[in-house]
Length: 304
Image (cartoon, rainbow, N blue to C red):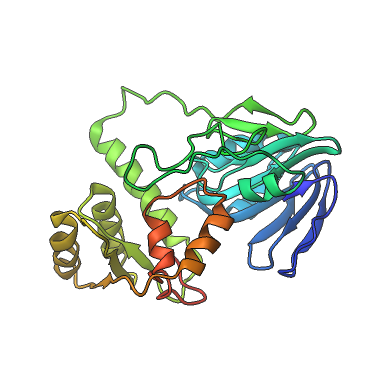
């Protein structure tokens, strides 16, 4: 939670005052790093950000070497799930996968990665219609949320904290039609390989694997690097036949282990906890995986 004052929690939250942005309150497990740029402006990087350009330094070092006005554009090469706070703005990662929800309240602008926390803080009416898995859209598409007055940043927006309003930024440049195809492929390979190479060394690297092209690309990169990893697929009702047979076959072809994570006993308490955490913003497959303990195989220090 980012706002004019600290937010207390029973979970041992920490508080950090940021220049020109207010107070950041967060759980102790969240990765939070603060760095000052070449003009001594303060920036706070929340979550996991990894450099994908092999010719450039890691995000923390890049911030320290750059001028203030140049930093937002630098983030276009950072992969991962993160938020960057600085220069009076909050900037999301390339796909806004670590969300930024925001709302104006009487005491100022509040922002959070959790719509449920923002709704709880100051009260907000929730849409009474409940989403259902496999029936229509299973989440609230940005920029809306389930809660009145709570909005979400789009990937093409930054949050201007003084106005508590989104501002356009970060539009990707037009693709170059003059670059040869082979050069484009080489560029993509260099970026993807660099991103996986520069990940913090995990206890175990897990690759969720389906029959899809994205999974095959990640498997190819991991195989190319020779970095040890585990391939896995979540079992669920109506799992497509290709997702059942191809992942272990693909893993075997590069000498990797594959694991099907089977559902355990359903827990109503875990489902309720998931709904409280998400504010019922989403009811996709992960809700069922969590309620049936299908993420319990992960250990501290693992990376998915």
